[in-house]
Structure formats: C-alpha cells, structure tokens
Length: 447
Ligand code: 5AD
Ligand code: SF4
Figure 1 (cartoon, protein in one colour):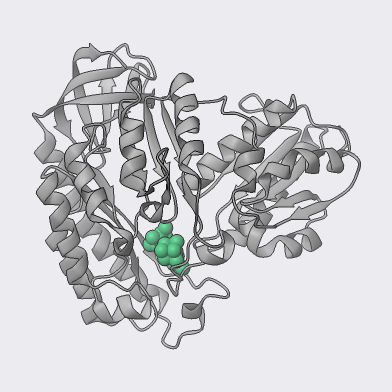
Figure 2 (cartoon, rainbow, N blue to C red):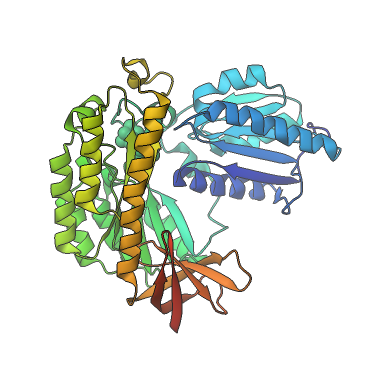
C-alpha cells in the first residue's frame, strides 16, 4: 500500500509514563471510531503512531531509529506505512522531525491528538501536517466515548505542570497545569466502570493539584473526586499518581483513612535527600518536610506502601549530598521506587548549570541507590508473606498457566491457577521475591 491510501489497520506504541498509556488508548479509540482496526500481533500496521516520551536520555534518537525500523519492516512486506509521531518528543521537536524524516506524515502534540483523525485524512491525500497547539481541555471534549477498557483503567484528571523543577521538560511539553471538570470525570469514570473497569487510577503530572467544582458548586480537591468514585458500586479500587509534596492537602491525607476503596499506596517523588540539591532542583520542599508528610500518611494508614522517584548526579551533587539521599531511603523504607541518572534536557535550566557530573560517578551512585532500594523492596515483600488480601487479576504471566494480579500495595502477585483477567480473588501471599510474590487463591471475590 502507498502512504496515500486510507489506512485500514493501526498500531499505537506508547513510551514513558502512564499518562502516555492513557493518551495511547484514547488515540486508539479515536482511530477505531474512523473504522481503522488494531493490527494483529506480529503484523505490519498501515498506520503507526509513535507516542513518545521526552523525559530522559536519547528520546529523539530513539524516535528516529524507530521510524527507520518501521519503514524497513514495511518495505520488506511491500508496505509504506503512514507514520505519526505523537507525545512529548512531537511537542518539543516536531518541526525538526518533519524536516529530517520525510517518512513521517503527522506530528501531533499531547494536547492536540483529538485532531488525529482529520490529520490521517489529510495524510491520505498526501499532505503532511504538524499540530502542537495546546488548547485547554479541548481534546477531552472532542474525543469519542470510552470503548476499550481493561479491568485496571487509567483516567487522566489533570495535565501539565507549573512547578518547573530545573531538570524537567514536562512544563514545556505538557504545558500549564489544568484540571478537567468534576462532572466530566465522574461521567467518564461511570463509563469506564460500565465497560468493565474495576480499578481506576487517576492520573496527572501533579494529580494532587487537581481542583474542580463538585455537583453542589463547591470548589473541591482530589479527595472529593475519590469519594464520588468510591460511591460507584462496581468500582472496587481507586489509585492516583503522581503527586507533588507541595500540593498535598489534609483532606487528601485523611481520605486514606476514610475510603476503603482507596488503595494503601502512595507515589510521592522526593528526587534527592539533600536540601541544597532540592533547592537547586527548585523542588521547594526539604528532606524533613517530606518525611513529616509521609508520617502523616502512616498515621492514618499504617500499612501504606510508599514509593518515590530519585535522580542521582544532578549538577553539582557531591558525595556527601548523595549520602543524604541514601539516608532518606533508609528513613522511609520504600516498598518500591524509580531511580534515574540525571539527563540534561535541552532548554531546561539544569542543562546549562556548571559542574555536570561524570557518567561513571552517576553509574556508581545509581548502583548504590538501587541496591538500597532493592533491599527495602524485598524486605517489604517478605513482610507481606502470610498476609491475606484481595488481588485483581490483570494479565497472563510468562509461564503457561500463570496469571498475574496486583495486591492492594501494588505488588505483582503470581498464581498458578485457572483465573481470568478481571477476576478478584482473596489470596494468601505465600512467597516473596525482589519484585513479585507468589499467591495462593483462597476464594473468588465478586469483581
Ligand atoms: N533526568 C533524569 N530523571 C528525570 N526525571 C525527570 N526529568 C529527569 C531528567 N532530566 C525523573 C524524575 C521524575 C520522573 C518521572 O522522571 O525523577 O519524577
Ligand atoms: Fe517535572 Fe517537577 Fe513538574 Fe514533576 S513537578 S512534572 S518533575 S517539573
């Protein structure tokens, strides 16, 4: 097929954060509403959407090599697939991609993808289009209704970021903080649940900064939305991610003690344990204020599983400052965490700071940090052995007959049992590994 035919099949490849997973699902729904169907596994699609991430290393090079690979595979099978570049790399480098890659027919930013259908029509006429506008909330109103839903679904409630941490590209690629309206979100959640969602994760770059007007016209925060969703009888579990320490409210903390359906898990990035580094990062919290915040969560929900993000090797980070990060890890005992080497992002203040840290130093620090985090994750899992909890089955495991679900604390739990995706089972956690547990089904719980 020539690139100027209307595509019949599509594939969306999403990279990076859960927000991209959500956007990718919605782009899929939009293409399906146009009669374009998902390509079968292992088959070349007529239209490939690369839903890109710009947050860390080599994002742009990766996009170019993906484009090359898709075109090569297409040629081998007598196709010239239509290629759309979406996501944060599209937003940041769209013009450049259009110039350098004649095979790309569309560049569409994260706030503009509701126009993808129209762009596909234009590409079928041989036109190449770029759309990186950032109209507030416009895409959500223009997208078709939710159709493809898994038992564990995402719901984007807030987008963008005004925090401008000095290392981070998100405020530039995702734009200013905006909250979607309360009533739209309750409606979308109802549709997700009607379509089979049993767990909803509320998403936002600063999800705990969400605010809106409830059905009584009151200005409310995320906890109110959580309460409203908890009233949906068929919804069993609620989560939210990612939060910023500075936006945490008393009411949201209290919700962890009040709402049973709100899972005992909190992802609260700290990035560094050194106050000097935190200041240079423009994080506007200290190690101590962060620890105090966590104590308050533990007060209302003693079993809460804590998770965080870390960056090692921020410009100027000394050995002693890195030791402060290890100290905060020791103090918190995270159940899980994500840790990264600092990567200069073009256009961010930190990229032009003096004293960039050599790669070998970053490597060594990352190894030490990950050893500490791994130790704590294993300890958390081991402490769970013998507990009984509900597990929501999400997917097949790697071994035949194996199924995988999540515990309330977001641990992966494997079963060798005849289970279906979407089942909720009461299980005993019988054995712990570094990143998962083995479970034994006690009984099925209605989900
Ligand atoms: N370099 C390394 N890690 C980064 N993150 C964000 N920007 C950078 C960067 N320039 C990490 C932070 C953030 C997570 C999503 O990605 O830890 O919380
Ligand atoms: Fe990036 Fe900081 Fe905003 Fe998180 S809070 S998205 S790290 S600028």
